[in-house]
Image (tube, rainbow, N blue to C red; front, top):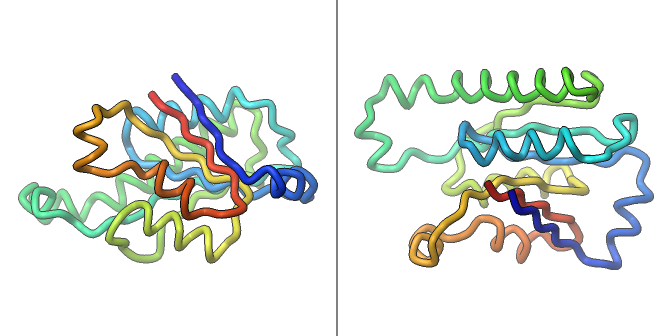
Length: 165
């Protein structure tokens, strides 16, 4: 597992000085999201100073997802809520305070996950954004884009932690 972190050096002092640090952890039901939770469990955090917001971004269905059927698509939010609940329980079992771990579903669908994370950040002003990233070939990155690079470029003044699996 590789981890990279980006921040504007002049803003890191402000991040470390705030009383409660707000951490957005964007999750889905992938292996890279499971790696993110495992990484956070191992991070040396002061639970009384960090508030972890586990968030799933609802994305507009693609044509291939539509082919899976309406039932599958309709059940997806329920599956994601359950995945977020399990992630929260995992954090609590590993020493995080229940009142410092929140579960959130995006209020509406976004064209892309990147758009959703940026919108949520603009609304709630997180100090740190954590995402998982699976290893991709250069061709896959070119075709699908790289959420982590987009977030690093667009989330000025915020640390972005990328956990690769």
